[in-house]
Length: 314
Image (cartoon, rainbow, N blue to C red; front, side):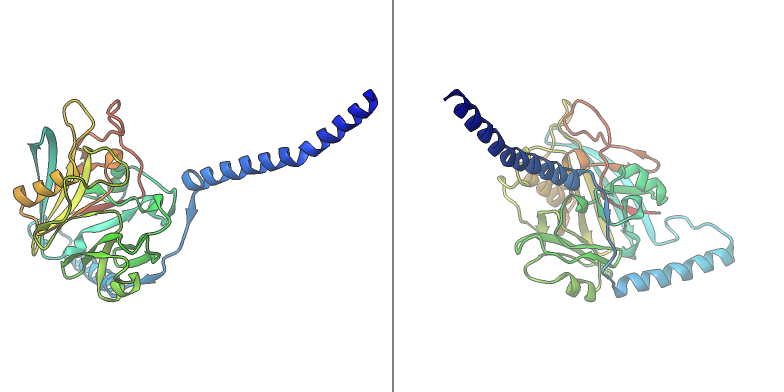
């Protein structure tokens, strides 16, 4: 009897091997998914180049030739672009505002980390700004943290997969028009064909046609109510603003989406405004240095590496 029990136990041990192998396979696959999502870098090619990008490239080449012939430098005012930085206190939070006046909205450009479109490819906002000789830069929509959501940068279409039918995007057209659209209402290809210069897919929209479009209860996924924020807005033709707020520190509580929208409406007079990636990503680079206090949890003031920036050279 003892031998029979031992043999049965032996067979029982052999039957456990499939279970062990299954558990090991699941663990390996889970680790791979985590690495693929957060660590492994993947690069992709652009899908299409729009007419706005081709026009901007031609204009840039022509300007470069003219400047080389003149052998002189051009200041911000003579190039039709000027920028200024101001700070204020609002809802127990420091808010930084860059006013941009330009007759050509394509001077408001985007840069990708390591000059590469892909997943888990990141750099700090200040590093990308320095690499592109930017006068001012803010973090973008961190497209690389997601697999969907339209991505158009400087008139080039990189991603045409909709995040959801109600995902709100900001479209900046090459003629200076700002428009908030849902991805279920239009394709990325149509936006490109209609002259889209930038399309950001984060959101939500804050102000549309002069009306605040978020409520006091609006928030991005499960984020805390008051956060560091990054936003972009249009005040009038030729007048745009970049807005960054501090948050999560003893000096600055941060803003809710509704407070941010109210500030950009009442204090800045925006007719259109859009929320970009915030929290620990919120960074404002101006005239050679980071001027806000970027932080993830308030314990340490440091920049987070992100996928992309919005910048201007003036």
